[in-house]
Length: 423
Ligand SMILES: Cc1cc2nc3c(=O)[nH]c(=O)nc-3n(C[C@H](O)[C@H](O)[C@H](O)COP(=O)(O)OP(=O)(O)OC[C@H]3O[C@@H](n4cnc5c(N)ncnc54)[C@H](O)[C@@H]3O)c2cc1C
Image (cartoon, rainbow, N blue to C red):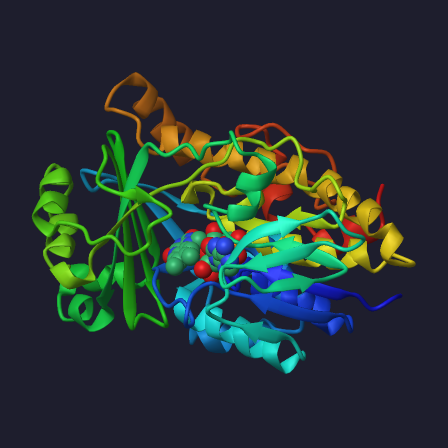
């Protein structure tokens, strides 16, 4: 296998995971990241079984558990906004081979940064890319301060508001109509309250009319991450730093159960952020015309967090891309590898994006017959269970739930086997 000189634009979770995968294969990888230091903003990141499998493939599973400060699974409980428990989601290692866990974004990012550095990658911070030049034999990334950096291959992992995507698809817009308050509360505050301490045992998803709340204990219960979605115009797309208004947040969820109101009362003004959630329509292409520049992660397929699969799709991309490139015999076969990568990955990321949109609707149904029917269905057949699945890998893209093969397709996907042995 030839060793390429590869540029990765963006040192977020997807860019760094791809860096690890490619540097482990012996490629010379340089990461160009616009910010001045490690991004520590954010709340919980979910690692579902299909993502955990890739962490294992990269040899990073023990470090992932260490970063999460626990190797215990993190079950999901669904409740109505009035406090009634509806069902418990059934993700189990015996069914999906790997568990599900959640952890804070900061240790996850640090783990990947350390692993990328140890694998020999060159990480350049304070380096914003503003242009791509494909006019020569090899593509060139142009930095804001005027440097031109040439490579055999350029990978755009520059996130939901990707600059490189705007070059390839100038008319494509992120759809952004749902806002999200984010806060992380010290677990000790919940532990001190007998009612709230139960929330440290499981992740809880409250379904309410036009709004929902997800509360996840992370770092072995030392922290509790809150995500509260709502309509309106409080957030800004792709701005992870915008401060939220605590009083407005409390007013927005004032009809939720008293447990939630007590929880929201613990959020400090300085800790509250408000985001607009991003969803990208399916793009015609992820590969630039010259065939040596391509989009991955949120740049290619940003989706709202209602599937818990945003980061998982980015890390699956990292394994898939490295395996496609491993089949190259020279730089002239890079375009074929990138097109193969896109052809393999797009159907999956597209259906998971649709599933996120589907959940955005059904997790926020107004009170009424459709909501009652959802609750009843969820009681009988909880999220993530797959009673009729025979355990075989689901190769073909299924429909979204209630298609019985959807959860096995989402959670038991083995990206390495799927890319290595195409059916
Ligand atoms: C600060 C932050 C917090 C987040 N918190 C959460 C969370 O709590 N939960 C969750 O599920 N998802 C969160 N996300 C989104 C989640 O990380 C992504 O869905 C997923 O990990 C995909 O990763 P990515 O590498 O494609 O994009 P990202 O992780 O967004 O990384 C993109 C990177 O590219 C860099 N970049 C952007 N433009 C340029 C440029 N022109 N030149 C060079 N570098 C550039 C950015 O600074 C960033 O580091 C967060 C993203 C960010 C940036």
